[in-house]
Image 1 (cartoon, rainbow, N blue to C red):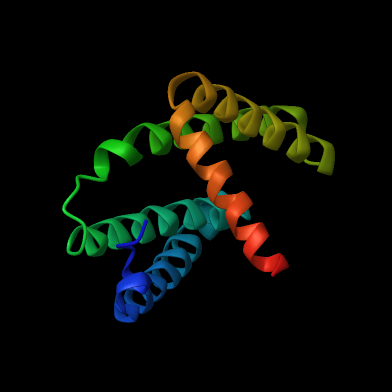
Image 2: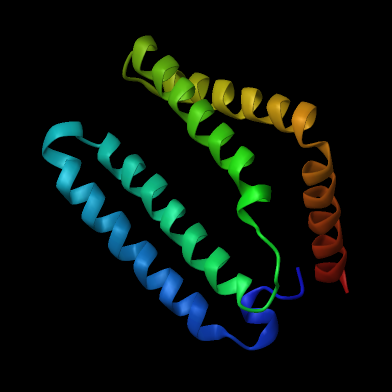
Length: 139
């Protein structure tokens, strides 16, 4: 995406996004820590990712006149739902490493299937971008 804020010299947007992301993560994690324990860190991370997304989408729209919400809504909804499913699996299997791994595999597996079935073009675009990036590293 050539109009991503850093690509057009808008480093301030990335700085604002990073600052808000960090503040959100800490605020949510510390607020929920007494009630949710260590899980508050993950909830804070999810909240901070949503803030980062909102900031970068709004800042990118200044340079690229496209409604990105349409492209991001389904993957975001899938991520939230599958993360909740993974959390459910992990919490019902106990409090050990294997339950965390099982929860992560469930979430990642279901998310991948949903994206491959309903948003194959986005998966293909992400794969192509990843391959181009790896090739660029090799130069």
